[in-house]
Length: 186
Image (cartoon, rainbow, N blue to C red; front, side, top):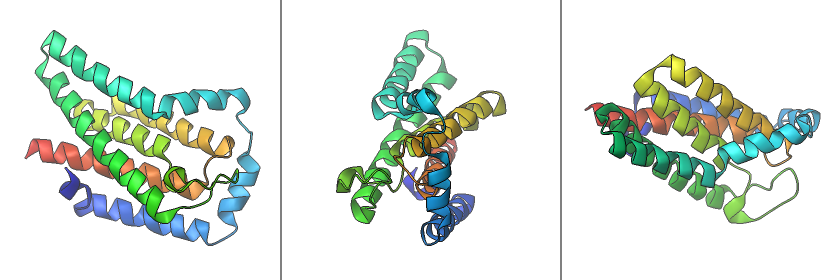
C-alpha cells in the first residue's frame, strides 16, 4: 500500500498538500487563520480531539476487525484489513514527519515527536474516511470526510495546529487510504 500511496493521483494529491502547506507556512496566512479560529469551537472542539485521537482511531480499527471476523462478512473483513494497514502506514509516516520537521505548535509546545506538522488526528481520520469511502462509496464516505474535516477544524480551534498542518495531514491520510485500497484490488 505504501508504494501506491505515492503513485499516480495520490502523488499529485501529496504534492498539492505539500505545496499548500509550504505556501501557507511561509506567509502570514497560516498565522492569520490560526488567530481567527483560535477558540472558535469552544467546548465542541473536544469532540474532534476525541474523535481523531490515536486511541479512538485504534479502537474503531480493532472493533471493525473483530466485528468483521465475528459476523463473517468478507467485504467488511477486507475493509478492516485495509483500515489496519492504512492506519499503521499513516501513523508511521506522520510520526516520521513530526520528528523530521519538528515544527513548534501554535500553543508553544515544542516536543519534537509531538510537533505540529502534520496533524496526527487529521491524517488518521482521513485515512479512515478514505478507506471506508473507497469500499462503500460516498454514502459512508461523505459523513466520515465531514467529521474528519471537523477534526481538523477542532485542532486549529484548540491552538494545536496550523491550517497547513491540517491540510497536509488530510492529503497524507487520503493518499495512504487510497493507496492501500488500490493495493488490495490488485
